[in-house]
Length: 183
Image (cartoon, rainbow, N blue to C red; front, side):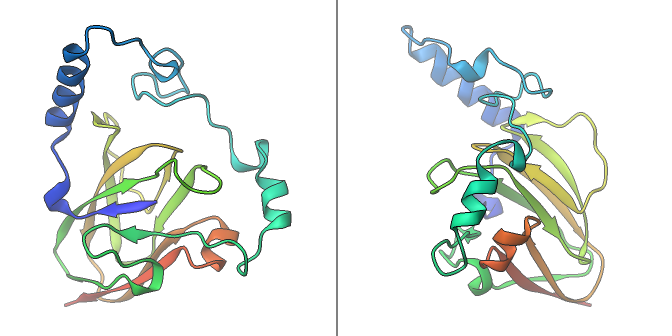
């Protein structure tokens, strides 16, 4: 999963407009499987109904993989830093827009529950460029395979905090980073 700095995050309306404009330019465009099947989040363009991790082959993947042969990563696209090398700093009162991109190019593409510890709370603003109609404060969001989720982090608590995938095997193999919040 990759993290995009705010300067690369388009507004939801602009992203939706650009997507439709690019589709209109290709008059031989054939609707993809993702445009026809829902997953309980109609209109979000997910490829298929993605079950929870133990409904697919994740159990078998977990049996075969260890921290020695599988490295799950969070990557900051702005710096290229991954996992513990990510060095974010915030101040109490900051409101930070973060784009979470769960790319398909991993050894085992799957949903990742992204969790932010204690630094504050966040709102899910959009999924795949579609504005989220139900604005609820959260500390964890499921980022489905191939999905992009925009969140707004409301930083309220000073200290040393962390963000990570909430799947224990992923966290243990390094899919986490710490960050500092100053008064």
